[in-house]
Structure formats: structure tokens, C-alpha cells
Image 1 (cartoon, rainbow, N blue to C red):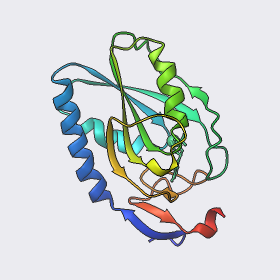
Image 2 (image 1 turned 30 degrees about the vertical axis):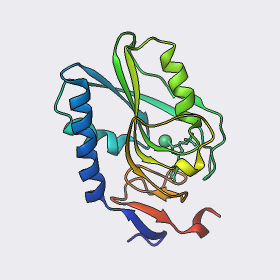
Image 3 (image 1 turned 90 degrees about the vertical axis):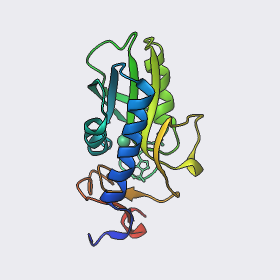
Image 4 (image 1 turned 180 degrees about the vertical axis):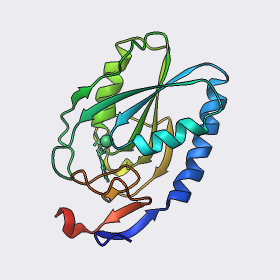
Length: 178
Ligand code: IMP
Ligand code: MG
């Protein structure tokens, strides 16, 4: 275990098993219709890459990068688009793939933005959900795990751009971010 980690919340095996369940649900819900999966960089990238490979159906990718955090563990509520999707989404079935829904501010903003472009459908898939922390009115359509209000890292999730490459989803020692 990494020395900055207090405990493991979810192992890679647990995440992969749950990801397969979500992938099967997505394949069933879209029943042969093509889906555009939009990865919200950078935290969702590992979850995204496992998820899309497990979906038995027609899937296309695109990527968005946003910033809502600054250098810390607290959401600022302000969202900046750093990279937008590279093609129009009008008339398409879109699923935004996010690492964690925390305050919900990021996805609330992105959902409004993408809905203006008139997709055929728009859904949210999140590896983790922290319902206790919600400020904006937003819900995940496909959620991996509901987790307590603790700062977690690993499996793509970072603290100040560190720990993204840890295999498991880990609770960081509080002295690291206090
Ligand atoms: P929201 O706008 O507050 O919902 O923030 C969502 C974003 O905050 C996520 O995409 C993550 O980048 C980041 N975030 C929230 N909680 C955590 C955490 O526990 N660890 C790492 N990043 C987090
Ligand atoms: Mg993120």
C-alpha cells in the first residue's frame, strides 16, 4: 500500500466486476443503437477504458476536459471547459462518463451545455457517487458505487495530480490534504 494511503475503499477487482454490470446494463438499454461515450478527462480515463471494452454494442468515443477544482480537495463550483468534444452530438445517444459525482456542479454544468446541442438522449455514468456532498440537482443514470464523504484517490482519481495510477480506490491520509 502507498504510504500516503490510510485504507483501501474498493479494490480494482471490485471496480471491474461492477463495471461489467454497468456495461451489460448499457448494452441492454441501447439494444443495438449506437452510443457516443464521452470521457470526462482526466479522472475518468481508466474507468472509461475498462467500461467501453466491456460494452457489447456499437460504441464511439469522444473526450472532454474540464476543471472545477483548482489545487485542493474542495470543489470551487466554477467549471471551465479545457477541451470540448471534437464532433457534433446532435441526434446522438450520448453517455457522459465521469469518475465521481461530488457536489454535482461539474455534471450539472456539462449536462446543460450538452443538452443545448440537442442529442437524441443524454445520460450520466459515474464510477463513484458521493450523495452526501450534493449541491447541484443531478443524478447518475449508471452509478458504480455510492461512497462516503471521504477524499479518495487511485484508479484515475487524483489529489493534486498524484496517485492516479494506483490500482485500487484508496482513502488518502487526511494529513496529506489538511
Ligand atoms: P463536483 O463538481 O463537485 O461533482 O466534482 C466532481 C469532480 O471533483 C470529479 O470529477 C473529481 O475530479 C473531483 N473529485 C471529487 N471528489 C473527489 C475525490 O474524492 N477524489 C478525487 N477527486 C475528486
Ligand atoms: Mg474529474
